[in-house]
Image (tube, rainbow, N blue to C red; front, side, top):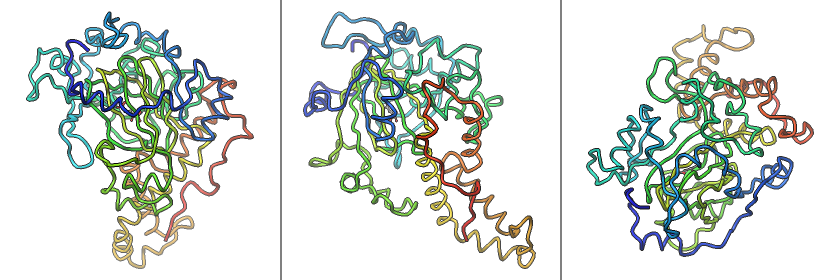
Length: 414
Ligand SMILES: O=C(O)CCC(=O)C(=O)O
């Protein structure tokens, strides 16, 4: 891509493109909700939607400039068009600098990052070629300013039964007990929705991870190409990636051995390597680890979502996270009991006083650690049952829904 920085040499690009199979997963021009449900959501398998799915999006028309050089791809990024959002405070990862299991991260106005990429601003590394704007809540900011997400994109039909995001409601369902600053009082992007925009030069990347809450995600390339590695929840694959075995307790010990960048691993580690072309949308199944490298300057939009057909996965993930929190602060339970003494055994509405305090402590940490607790989970279920997000043609027939595991909203463990 002319003009914009890149941390990828031609040789590095060639290596990335080298062992790609032609279309290793199915690609559809259009996918009906019923087929999505039957063939991908419930079996939990990935697929691509072709660029036809995004061809009418305003962002694809406005944020791209057609190229004449075929080897540079059909378009290049139009950063000038993004300057209307220059005042947004965006999260910025420096993918050239690793910090523990993440990158060094800062926040700043989008206009400053655009300046650096366009050679007008200062950054210690020439052109800011490692800088990656990640998890920018662009759509929420647009809505908060009185606009509609339609000024940027339209959610593909098959992804409309989304229990995490406000695709068809005027305001984000920010009451889902997700952590983050109060949108009204903070100048920074809020954390209340799961609709993200990413932009960064060739070579910027997202390390190996799986998505929060056992959610699914879809990701659309507005401009540029990405390489994806997708790894199914298979014990043998996980072993090669250094991930503790499936079904191990919720305890995250051992995760420090997990690969950060799969390009550093030797031999065949399994999984699927996919080239996502400009305009295409990829579906990432729940619980699949994945890594992404930008081959060109890329702008992409993605949603994480939870669907009622597989609600029990989100329930299980939260239960595991709770077990991990309980294990990690087991000593706090004894401290509470000895502080309250006999008074703590006093029964309030069927639950001893010490247990109420312990449950509150666990839930507080769970919200910080897993992003939500049981209150947020059940609020999400109730909100979506009362006011379904999608037309009935795009929602799971009742008989196919997984009933969430029964029981009270929180089962204390001794
Ligand atoms: O595009 C990227 O860099 C990362 C996207 C991703 O990991 C996701 O959608 O879950």
